[in-house]
Image (cartoon, rainbow, N blue to C red):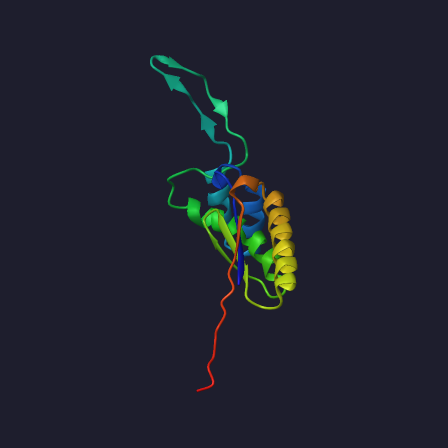
Amino acid sequence: MAAATAISKKASDYVDHDAIFEELAATKCRPIMYNYVKAFLQERILTIAIGDHKTGPIPHPQRGIPHGAVLSPTLFTLATLKIHRALSQVEDIKHFICADDVTIWSTTGSPGHIQTQLQEALNRAQQAATTIGLPCSAEKRTANTSQQTVETSSH
Protein backbone atom coordinates (compact mmCIF):
# COMPACT_ATOMS: atom_id res chain seq x y z
CA MET A 1 0.00 0.00 0.00
CA ALA A 2 1.14 3.52 -0.70
CA ALA A 3 -0.44 6.78 0.42
CA ALA A 4 0.12 10.46 -0.19
CA THR A 5 -1.31 13.45 1.62
CA ALA A 6 -1.60 16.98 0.30
CA ILE A 7 -2.64 19.67 2.74
CA SER A 8 -3.51 23.21 1.78
CA LYS A 9 -2.48 25.78 4.34
CA LYS A 10 -5.41 27.89 5.54
CA ALA A 11 -7.41 26.62 2.58
CA SER A 12 -10.69 28.21 3.60
CA ASP A 13 -9.06 31.65 3.32
CA TYR A 14 -8.35 31.12 -0.38
CA VAL A 15 -11.42 29.41 -1.85
CA ASP A 16 -12.64 31.31 -4.89
CA HIS A 17 -16.28 32.35 -4.48
CA ASP A 18 -17.00 31.57 -8.12
CA ALA A 19 -16.01 27.93 -7.49
CA ILE A 20 -18.61 27.76 -4.72
CA PHE A 21 -21.28 29.43 -6.86
CA GLU A 22 -20.55 27.05 -9.76
CA GLU A 23 -20.93 23.96 -7.58
CA LEU A 24 -23.99 25.36 -5.83
CA ALA A 25 -25.66 26.04 -9.18
CA ALA A 26 -24.89 22.45 -10.24
CA THR A 27 -26.93 21.18 -7.26
CA LYS A 28 -29.99 22.86 -8.80
CA CYS A 29 -30.87 24.38 -5.45
CA ARG A 30 -33.67 26.88 -5.31
CA PRO A 31 -32.84 30.48 -6.26
CA ILE A 32 -33.53 31.66 -2.70
CA MET A 33 -30.74 29.40 -1.39
CA TYR A 34 -28.32 30.40 -4.14
CA ASN A 35 -28.98 34.10 -3.50
CA TYR A 36 -28.63 33.62 0.27
CA VAL A 37 -25.19 32.05 -0.14
CA LYS A 38 -24.18 34.74 -2.63
CA ALA A 39 -25.21 37.49 -0.20
CA PHE A 40 -23.42 35.65 2.63
CA LEU A 41 -20.12 35.60 0.74
CA GLN A 42 -20.09 38.74 -1.38
CA GLU A 43 -19.63 42.38 -0.52
CA ARG A 44 -18.13 41.69 2.90
CA ILE A 45 -16.42 44.64 4.60
CA LEU A 46 -13.50 44.61 7.07
CA THR A 47 -12.69 47.11 9.76
CA ILE A 48 -9.46 46.99 11.76
CA ALA A 49 -9.31 48.45 15.26
CA ILE A 50 -6.21 48.89 17.42
CA GLY A 51 -6.98 50.60 20.69
CA ASP A 52 -8.96 53.76 19.90
CA HIS A 53 -7.82 53.80 16.28
CA LYS A 54 -10.14 52.28 13.71
CA THR A 55 -9.82 52.09 9.94
CA GLY A 56 -12.60 52.92 7.58
CA PRO A 57 -14.39 50.10 5.79
CA ILE A 58 -12.07 47.95 3.67
CA PRO A 59 -13.61 45.80 0.91
CA HIS A 60 -12.92 42.12 1.49
CA PRO A 61 -11.51 40.15 -1.47
CA GLN A 62 -13.98 37.87 -3.25
CA ARG A 63 -12.39 34.73 -1.89
CA GLY A 64 -12.33 32.82 1.35
CA ILE A 65 -15.05 31.55 3.62
CA PRO A 66 -15.93 33.22 6.93
CA HIS A 67 -14.52 31.32 9.91
CA GLY A 68 -16.94 30.12 12.56
CA ALA A 69 -20.13 30.35 10.48
CA VAL A 70 -22.38 27.28 10.50
CA LEU A 71 -22.64 27.37 6.70
CA SER A 72 -18.87 27.56 6.08
CA PRO A 73 -17.97 23.82 6.23
CA THR A 74 -20.73 23.01 3.74
CA LEU A 75 -19.54 25.73 1.35
CA PHE A 76 -15.96 24.50 1.60
CA THR A 77 -17.10 20.95 0.87
CA LEU A 78 -18.98 22.18 -2.20
CA ALA A 79 -15.84 23.88 -3.48
CA THR A 80 -13.73 20.74 -3.02
CA LEU A 81 -16.07 18.61 -5.15
CA LYS A 82 -13.89 19.52 -8.13
CA ILE A 83 -10.93 17.82 -6.42
CA HIS A 84 -13.09 14.76 -5.69
CA ARG A 85 -14.14 14.50 -9.35
CA ALA A 86 -10.54 14.86 -10.55
CA LEU A 87 -9.31 12.09 -8.24
CA SER A 88 -12.22 9.81 -9.10
CA GLN A 89 -10.92 9.66 -12.68
CA VAL A 90 -7.57 8.10 -11.71
CA GLU A 91 -7.58 4.31 -12.00
CA ASP A 92 -6.72 2.22 -8.90
CA ILE A 93 -6.72 5.25 -6.60
CA LYS A 94 -8.86 5.82 -3.52
CA HIS A 95 -9.10 9.16 -1.75
CA PHE A 96 -10.54 10.85 1.30
CA ILE A 97 -11.12 14.58 1.68
CA CYS A 98 -11.70 15.97 5.16
CA ALA A 99 -11.69 19.74 5.50
CA ASP A 100 -8.42 20.85 3.89
CA ASP A 101 -6.70 17.45 4.04
CA VAL A 102 -6.65 15.25 0.95
CA THR A 103 -5.40 11.69 1.42
CA ILE A 104 -4.80 9.54 -1.65
CA TRP A 105 -3.87 5.85 -1.57
CA SER A 106 -3.62 2.72 -3.65
CA THR A 107 -3.30 -0.98 -2.89
CA THR A 108 -3.58 -2.24 -6.47
CA GLY A 109 -0.75 -3.13 -8.81
CA SER A 110 3.01 -3.26 -8.75
CA PRO A 111 5.03 -0.67 -6.82
CA GLY A 112 5.82 1.09 -10.12
CA HIS A 113 2.13 1.19 -11.10
CA ILE A 114 1.15 2.51 -7.68
CA GLN A 115 3.82 5.22 -7.85
CA THR A 116 2.65 6.28 -11.31
CA GLN A 117 -1.00 6.39 -10.25
CA LEU A 118 -0.25 8.32 -7.04
CA GLN A 119 1.74 10.88 -9.01
CA GLU A 120 -1.09 11.24 -11.53
CA ALA A 121 -3.56 11.68 -8.66
CA LEU A 122 -1.37 14.30 -6.97
CA ASN A 123 -1.02 16.20 -10.25
CA ARG A 124 -4.78 16.15 -10.83
CA ALA A 125 -5.53 17.14 -7.23
CA GLN A 126 -3.12 20.08 -7.47
CA GLN A 127 -4.59 21.20 -10.80
CA ALA A 128 -8.16 21.01 -9.46
CA ALA A 129 -7.16 22.79 -6.24
CA THR A 130 -5.56 25.59 -8.23
CA THR A 131 -8.74 26.14 -10.26
CA ILE A 132 -10.72 26.75 -7.07
CA GLY A 133 -8.09 29.03 -5.57
CA LEU A 134 -6.48 26.59 -3.13
CA PRO A 135 -2.72 26.61 -2.73
CA CYS A 136 -1.11 23.18 -2.37
CA SER A 137 1.57 23.26 0.25
CA ALA A 138 4.70 21.45 -0.98
CA GLU A 139 6.18 21.31 2.53
CA LYS A 140 3.04 19.64 3.86
CA ARG A 141 2.99 16.84 1.27
CA THR A 142 3.85 13.43 2.63
CA ALA A 143 4.13 9.99 1.09
CA ASN A 144 4.21 6.61 2.81
CA THR A 145 4.63 3.10 1.54
CA SER A 146 4.01 -0.12 3.38
CA GLN A 147 4.60 -3.68 2.28
CA GLN A 148 3.41 -6.63 4.27
CA THR A 149 4.95 -10.02 3.73
CA VAL A 150 2.87 -12.99 4.70
CA GLU A 151 4.79 -16.18 5.34
CA THR A 152 3.09 -19.51 5.01
CA SER A 153 4.30 -22.83 6.29
CA SER A 154 3.63 -26.22 4.80
CA HIS A 155 2.84 -28.18 7.96
